[in-house]
Length: 428
Image (cartoon, rainbow, N blue to C red):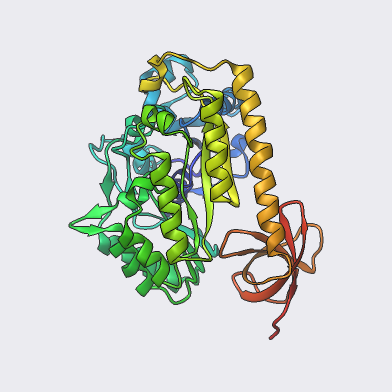
């Protein structure tokens, strides 16, 4: 019987939630978290496969655990998650130090390995009852898994499978549990979260039902959505429900309709801009996070500048920017018109400089305004200061006596990098 475990997680928020759920299962089975790989009986790497850079890092970690196993000879190494799903037995052939390669659908059964048993394969994805980490004020709530969109560059449908939605009852039970634990903020999760559909209940209806269960929970977020599934009904719920955060992730990928068609994104540049306009009309205070890719096959300078034009209109305050890299098994791999590394790197640098100027401008406009913040943690630089964040996911440093999870009003008095400096304007 194993006594201690170690989990390393890479990639998306869903992986983090699933790792938390696995910790709950392992500890219920009598294991405790080890301080290091040298002290662990079982080590679990929960992998990501969305980008090559993520896989490169994981190969390095596998090499590290191979080294550890030379001294900690009893260590059992398990690799799970999307990279494990993509490579399966080839991963173990490549790295004999791996004892088990566990597909995505079987993640929750890793506890059977730790208990000395074997894993029986699950044909479909299994949702955990909850993934709460004791004491946290922000928590993830997985509501759906998989993707049916098959964007031509994306490996997610191949490693996560087709879309499956969690039951409304199970979701609401978890939300009630989190609310009872004093959680202050939740994020509803899915690879295509706003395509949720269970027994005729669609995402806008679910979001309204979740909001009705919240007392301690102040802000409800959701990630990752798809622009094509932002219905008018969803925008109406976003406007109506006070607890639904008015900071929304709207992935763009490209501002060129021609490139979007090659990407199989199911919307045009014009439809994307129309969506932004609808949201701003219903929710004037809304802010955006955005995903942007450059260097997709056949992307011209004109296509690239169309992307910059859309970003200029969007004024996103939280960008995620990267250049295209090939994922084996996706349609884009076989496309003509590959962009060379030098051009991709140049465009990414230009994109980052362009978008960061937008972020700086948008944040500078906020200086002098009053904002509600949630206290997150004590500053490492000054024990009297707390790191907080706003509904719009802006980081604020402020001196306050409010406890972690507490809410207070602050005046945003300045910027230090991308972080606001704040002064509390309410006390008690």
